[in-house]
Length: 165
Length: 156
Image 1 (spheres, rainbow over the protein chains, first blue to last red):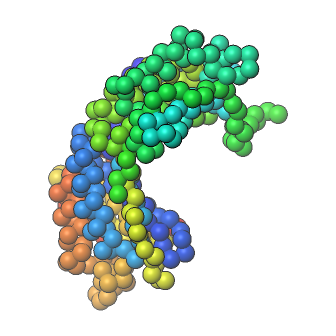
Image 2: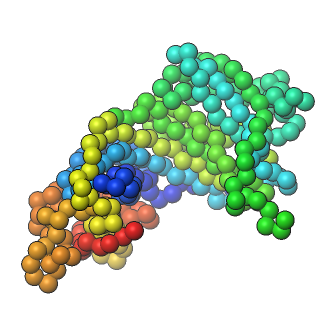
Image 3: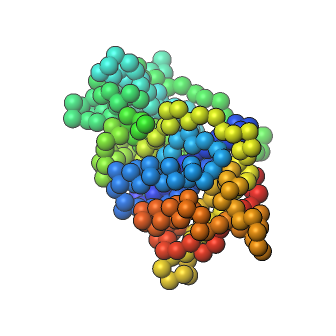
Protein backbone atom coordinates (compact mmCIF):
# COMPACT_ATOMS: atom_id res chain seq x y z
CA UNK A 1 0.00 0.00 0.00
CA UNK A 2 1.15 3.47 -0.77
CA UNK A 3 -0.04 7.03 -0.90
CA UNK A 4 -0.29 8.23 -4.50
CA UNK A 5 -0.91 11.73 -5.78
CA UNK A 6 -3.85 12.54 -8.01
CA UNK A 7 -2.70 13.76 -11.46
CA UNK A 8 -3.87 17.27 -10.73
CA UNK A 9 -4.47 19.77 -7.99
CA UNK A 10 -7.81 21.54 -8.10
CA UNK A 11 -8.73 25.21 -7.93
CA UNK A 12 -12.30 25.61 -6.77
CA UNK A 13 -13.72 29.13 -7.25
CA UNK A 14 -16.89 29.82 -5.26
CA UNK A 15 -19.57 32.21 -6.53
CA UNK A 16 -22.75 33.70 -5.05
CA UNK A 17 -25.67 34.87 -7.16
CA UNK A 18 -28.53 37.29 -6.48
CA UNK A 19 -30.57 34.66 -4.63
CA UNK A 20 -27.64 33.69 -2.42
CA UNK A 21 -27.19 30.41 -4.24
CA UNK A 22 -23.64 29.15 -4.50
CA UNK A 23 -21.93 27.97 -7.67
CA UNK A 24 -18.45 26.76 -8.47
CA UNK A 25 -15.84 26.87 -11.18
CA UNK A 26 -13.40 23.99 -11.03
CA UNK A 27 -10.02 24.29 -12.72
CA UNK A 28 -7.24 21.70 -12.58
CA UNK A 29 -3.50 22.22 -12.71
CA UNK A 30 -0.82 19.51 -12.84
CA UNK A 31 0.03 18.10 -9.44
CA UNK A 32 3.65 19.19 -9.85
CA UNK A 33 2.63 22.85 -9.86
CA UNK A 34 4.02 24.70 -6.85
CA UNK A 35 1.32 25.94 -4.49
CA UNK A 36 2.63 29.50 -4.65
CA UNK A 37 2.58 29.42 -8.45
CA UNK A 38 -0.93 27.96 -8.53
CA UNK A 39 -2.23 30.58 -6.10
CA UNK A 40 -0.72 33.40 -8.15
CA UNK A 41 -2.31 32.00 -11.30
CA UNK A 42 -5.60 31.59 -9.46
CA UNK A 43 -5.60 35.23 -8.44
CA UNK A 44 -5.18 36.29 -12.06
CA UNK A 45 -7.76 33.79 -13.28
CA UNK A 46 -10.25 34.83 -10.62
CA UNK A 47 -10.19 38.42 -11.86
CA UNK A 48 -10.74 37.27 -15.45
CA UNK A 49 -13.56 34.93 -14.45
CA UNK A 50 -15.24 37.70 -12.50
CA UNK A 51 -15.29 39.82 -15.65
CA UNK A 52 -17.37 37.11 -17.33
CA UNK A 53 -19.88 36.39 -14.57
CA UNK A 54 -22.77 38.30 -13.01
CA UNK A 55 -22.10 36.47 -9.71
CA UNK A 56 -19.68 37.74 -7.11
CA UNK A 57 -16.57 35.71 -6.37
CA UNK A 58 -16.42 35.01 -2.63
CA UNK A 59 -13.28 32.88 -2.49
CA UNK A 60 -11.27 30.03 -3.89
CA UNK A 61 -9.44 26.97 -2.65
CA UNK A 62 -6.37 25.14 -3.92
CA UNK A 63 -6.32 21.44 -3.04
CA UNK A 64 -3.77 18.70 -3.61
CA UNK A 65 -5.25 15.21 -3.30
CA UNK A 66 -3.46 12.06 -2.17
CA UNK A 67 -5.05 8.61 -2.07
CA UNK A 68 -4.03 5.39 -0.34
CA UNK A 69 -4.09 2.89 -3.20
CA UNK A 70 -4.50 -0.21 -1.04
CA UNK A 71 -5.83 0.76 2.38
CA UNK A 72 -5.65 -1.80 5.16
CA UNK A 73 -8.91 -3.19 6.53
CA UNK A 74 -10.31 -1.14 9.42
CA UNK A 75 -10.60 -2.90 12.77
CA UNK A 76 -13.89 -4.75 13.30
CA UNK A 77 -16.30 -2.59 15.27
CA UNK A 78 -14.55 0.66 14.43
CA UNK A 79 -16.87 3.68 14.31
CA UNK A 80 -15.96 7.17 13.15
CA UNK A 81 -18.54 8.62 15.56
CA UNK A 82 -16.20 7.73 18.43
CA UNK A 83 -13.65 10.49 18.44
CA UNK A 84 -10.56 11.35 20.35
CA UNK A 85 -10.60 15.13 20.81
CA UNK A 86 -7.35 16.98 21.30
CA UNK A 87 -7.60 20.62 22.35
CA UNK A 88 -4.41 22.65 22.27
CA UNK A 89 -3.36 26.09 23.41
CA UNK A 90 -1.58 28.32 20.94
CA UNK A 91 1.11 30.96 21.33
CA UNK A 92 -1.43 33.78 20.95
CA UNK A 93 -3.45 32.52 23.94
CA UNK A 94 -6.21 30.96 21.91
CA UNK A 95 -7.03 27.32 21.38
CA UNK A 96 -7.35 24.96 18.48
CA UNK A 97 -8.48 21.37 18.19
CA UNK A 98 -8.48 18.30 16.06
CA UNK A 99 -10.05 14.92 16.47
CA UNK A 100 -9.04 11.36 15.66
CA UNK A 101 -11.88 9.12 14.42
CA UNK A 102 -12.36 5.77 16.19
CA UNK A 103 -9.74 6.37 18.83
CA UNK A 104 -8.54 3.12 20.35
CA UNK A 105 -10.08 2.26 23.71
CA UNK A 106 -6.67 1.18 24.98
CA UNK A 107 -5.57 4.85 24.93
CA UNK A 108 -8.35 5.98 27.24
CA UNK A 109 -8.59 6.29 30.98
CA UNK A 110 -11.69 4.94 32.70
CA UNK A 111 -13.18 8.46 32.73
CA UNK A 112 -12.89 8.76 28.95
CA UNK A 113 -9.94 11.12 29.03
CA UNK A 114 -6.94 10.24 26.89
CA UNK A 115 -4.13 8.57 28.81
CA UNK A 116 -1.35 11.02 27.99
CA UNK A 117 1.24 8.52 29.21
CA UNK A 118 0.24 5.90 26.69
CA UNK A 119 3.11 5.48 24.24
CA UNK A 120 1.15 6.42 21.11
CA UNK A 121 -0.56 9.39 22.74
CA UNK A 122 2.70 10.66 24.24
CA UNK A 123 4.40 10.42 20.85
CA UNK A 124 1.65 12.47 19.18
CA UNK A 125 1.64 15.08 21.93
CA UNK A 126 5.41 15.44 21.82
CA UNK A 127 5.45 15.79 18.05
CA UNK A 128 2.68 18.40 17.93
CA UNK A 129 4.06 20.44 20.84
CA UNK A 130 7.65 20.31 19.56
CA UNK A 131 9.09 23.78 18.99
CA UNK A 132 10.15 22.71 15.52
CA UNK A 133 6.66 21.57 14.62
CA UNK A 134 4.61 23.79 12.35
CA UNK A 135 1.11 22.79 13.46
CA UNK A 136 -0.93 25.89 14.21
CA UNK A 137 -4.28 27.33 15.20
CA UNK A 138 -6.62 28.96 12.70
CA UNK A 139 -4.83 32.28 13.15
CA UNK A 140 -1.49 30.72 12.23
CA UNK A 141 -0.21 30.85 15.80
CA UNK A 142 1.94 27.91 16.87
CA UNK A 143 0.50 25.16 19.02
CA UNK A 144 2.29 25.24 22.36
CA UNK A 145 0.68 22.68 24.67
CA UNK A 146 -2.07 20.13 25.02
CA UNK A 147 -4.95 21.56 27.03
CA UNK A 148 -7.47 18.71 27.05
CA UNK A 149 -7.83 15.33 25.42
CA UNK A 150 -10.86 13.11 25.77
CA UNK A 151 -13.19 10.72 24.02
CA UNK A 152 -16.56 11.93 22.76
CA UNK A 153 -19.26 10.68 20.44
CA UNK A 154 -21.10 12.48 17.69
CA UNK A 155 -24.49 11.50 16.32
CA UNK A 156 -24.59 8.96 13.54
CA UNK A 157 -25.73 10.28 10.22
CA UNK A 158 -28.62 8.59 8.44
CA UNK A 159 -26.21 6.77 6.15
CA UNK A 160 -24.16 5.53 9.11
CA UNK A 161 -27.10 3.80 10.80
CA UNK A 162 -27.36 0.00 10.48
CA UNK A 163 -29.50 -1.12 7.57
CA UNK A 164 -30.60 -4.37 9.20
CA UNK A 165 -32.09 -2.86 12.35
CA UNK B 1 -6.86 37.41 1.33
CA UNK B 2 -4.98 34.14 1.78
CA UNK B 3 -6.00 32.56 5.05
CA UNK B 4 -3.03 32.33 7.43
CA UNK B 5 -3.09 28.56 7.48
CA UNK B 6 -3.29 25.72 5.02
CA UNK B 7 -5.14 22.63 6.17
CA UNK B 8 -4.14 18.99 6.21
CA UNK B 9 -7.24 16.81 6.09
CA UNK B 10 -6.54 13.16 6.79
CA UNK B 11 -9.56 11.03 5.93
CA UNK B 12 -10.16 7.76 7.80
CA UNK B 13 -12.59 4.95 7.06
CA UNK B 14 -14.22 2.69 9.61
CA UNK B 15 -15.47 -0.87 9.32
CA UNK B 16 -18.75 0.22 7.66
CA UNK B 17 -17.07 2.42 5.07
CA UNK B 18 -18.05 5.62 6.85
CA UNK B 19 -15.39 8.30 6.90
CA UNK B 20 -14.18 10.84 9.40
CA UNK B 21 -11.32 13.29 9.23
CA UNK B 22 -8.51 14.74 11.26
CA UNK B 23 -7.97 18.36 10.20
CA UNK B 24 -4.78 20.13 11.23
CA UNK B 25 -3.46 23.58 10.31
CA UNK B 26 -0.01 24.44 9.02
CA UNK B 27 1.26 27.89 7.98
CA UNK B 28 -0.05 29.01 4.59
CA UNK B 29 3.52 29.76 3.55
CA UNK B 30 4.26 26.02 3.56
CA UNK B 31 5.00 24.34 0.25
CA UNK B 32 3.13 21.26 -0.90
CA UNK B 33 6.29 19.25 -0.19
CA UNK B 34 6.13 20.41 3.43
CA UNK B 35 2.41 19.64 3.51
CA UNK B 36 3.06 16.13 2.23
CA UNK B 37 5.83 15.57 4.78
CA UNK B 38 3.70 16.81 7.67
CA UNK B 39 0.71 14.76 6.58
CA UNK B 40 2.83 11.64 6.32
CA UNK B 41 4.40 12.22 9.72
CA UNK B 42 1.05 12.92 11.33
CA UNK B 43 -0.51 9.85 9.72
CA UNK B 44 2.23 7.65 11.16
CA UNK B 45 1.58 9.07 14.63
CA UNK B 46 -2.19 8.64 14.36
CA UNK B 47 -2.09 5.13 12.90
CA UNK B 48 -1.48 3.41 16.26
CA UNK B 49 -4.21 5.53 17.87
CA UNK B 50 -7.18 4.69 15.66
CA UNK B 51 -9.15 1.61 14.68
CA UNK B 52 -9.85 3.22 11.30
CA UNK B 53 -7.62 3.14 8.26
CA UNK B 54 -6.27 6.13 6.34
CA UNK B 55 -7.79 6.27 2.85
CA UNK B 56 -6.70 9.70 1.58
CA UNK B 57 -5.55 13.11 2.56
CA UNK B 58 -5.79 16.62 1.14
CA UNK B 59 -3.67 19.71 1.54
CA UNK B 60 -5.62 22.93 0.93
CA UNK B 61 -5.07 26.66 0.81
CA UNK B 62 -8.04 29.03 0.96
CA UNK B 63 -8.38 32.58 -0.28
CA UNK B 64 -11.30 34.68 0.94
CA UNK B 65 -12.47 37.76 -0.95
CA UNK B 66 -12.75 40.37 1.79
CA UNK B 67 -15.48 42.51 0.26
CA UNK B 68 -17.12 40.51 -2.50
CA UNK B 69 -20.11 42.83 -2.87
CA UNK B 70 -23.60 41.77 -3.86
CA UNK B 71 -24.50 40.10 -7.13
CA UNK B 72 -26.77 42.00 -9.50
CA UNK B 73 -30.46 41.13 -9.47
CA UNK B 74 -30.18 39.22 -12.76
CA UNK B 75 -27.36 36.97 -11.58
CA UNK B 76 -28.42 33.30 -11.54
CA UNK B 77 -25.94 30.46 -11.21
CA UNK B 78 -28.00 28.28 -13.57
CA UNK B 79 -26.98 30.44 -16.55
CA UNK B 80 -23.73 28.63 -16.98
CA UNK B 81 -20.97 29.33 -19.46
CA UNK B 82 -19.39 26.07 -20.61
CA UNK B 83 -15.90 26.18 -22.09
CA UNK B 84 -14.54 22.98 -23.62
CA UNK B 85 -10.79 22.81 -24.07
CA UNK B 86 -8.61 20.21 -25.79
CA UNK B 87 -5.01 19.21 -25.27
CA UNK B 88 -2.23 19.55 -27.86
CA UNK B 89 -3.26 16.44 -29.78
CA UNK B 90 -6.92 17.34 -29.62
CA UNK B 91 -7.81 13.89 -28.36
CA UNK B 92 -8.40 14.75 -24.73
CA UNK B 93 -11.00 17.24 -23.63
CA UNK B 94 -11.86 19.05 -20.44
CA UNK B 95 -14.30 21.73 -19.45
CA UNK B 96 -14.48 24.77 -17.27
CA UNK B 97 -17.88 26.16 -16.28
CA UNK B 98 -18.66 29.68 -15.13
CA UNK B 99 -21.93 30.37 -13.27
CA UNK B 100 -24.10 33.34 -14.29
CA UNK B 101 -22.26 34.02 -17.50
CA UNK B 102 -22.76 37.62 -18.65
CA UNK B 103 -25.20 38.23 -21.49
CA UNK B 104 -22.77 40.53 -23.27
CA UNK B 105 -20.34 37.72 -24.08
CA UNK B 106 -23.04 35.58 -25.70
CA UNK B 107 -23.50 35.98 -29.45
CA UNK B 108 -26.57 37.98 -30.40
CA UNK B 109 -26.80 37.10 -34.09
CA UNK B 110 -26.15 34.19 -36.42
CA UNK B 111 -26.69 30.49 -35.85
CA UNK B 112 -25.43 30.63 -32.27
CA UNK B 113 -27.45 33.61 -31.16
CA UNK B 114 -28.35 33.39 -27.50
CA UNK B 115 -26.32 30.24 -26.97
CA UNK B 116 -22.81 30.41 -28.41
CA UNK B 117 -20.22 32.41 -26.50
CA UNK B 118 -18.40 35.02 -28.55
CA UNK B 119 -14.87 33.66 -28.71
CA UNK B 120 -13.57 36.99 -30.04
CA UNK B 121 -14.83 38.87 -27.00
CA UNK B 122 -11.92 40.46 -25.19
CA UNK B 123 -12.85 39.02 -21.79
CA UNK B 124 -13.12 35.56 -23.32
CA UNK B 125 -9.77 35.91 -25.10
CA UNK B 126 -8.08 37.01 -21.86
CA UNK B 127 -9.65 34.12 -19.96
CA UNK B 128 -8.57 31.53 -22.54
CA UNK B 129 -5.05 32.96 -22.65
CA UNK B 130 -4.75 32.71 -18.86
CA UNK B 131 -6.10 29.13 -18.80
CA UNK B 132 -3.48 28.06 -21.33
CA UNK B 133 -0.70 30.13 -19.78
CA UNK B 134 -1.22 28.59 -16.33
CA UNK B 135 -1.12 25.02 -17.74
CA UNK B 136 -4.66 24.27 -16.66
CA UNK B 137 -5.71 20.74 -17.49
CA UNK B 138 -8.50 18.22 -17.25
CA UNK B 139 -8.60 16.01 -14.11
CA UNK B 140 -6.28 13.50 -15.77
CA UNK B 141 -3.52 16.03 -16.26
CA UNK B 142 -3.95 16.58 -20.01
CA UNK B 143 -2.92 20.19 -20.36
CA UNK B 144 -5.24 22.47 -22.29
CA UNK B 145 -3.90 23.80 -25.57
CA UNK B 146 -6.90 25.39 -27.25
CA UNK B 147 -10.55 26.29 -26.73
CA UNK B 148 -12.74 23.98 -28.81
CA UNK B 149 -16.17 25.44 -28.16
CA UNK B 150 -18.06 27.56 -25.66
CA UNK B 151 -21.76 28.00 -25.09
CA UNK B 152 -24.37 28.96 -22.54
CA UNK B 153 -26.29 26.17 -20.87
CA UNK B 154 -28.85 26.00 -18.11
CA UNK B 155 -27.37 23.92 -15.29
CA UNK B 156 -28.95 23.41 -11.92
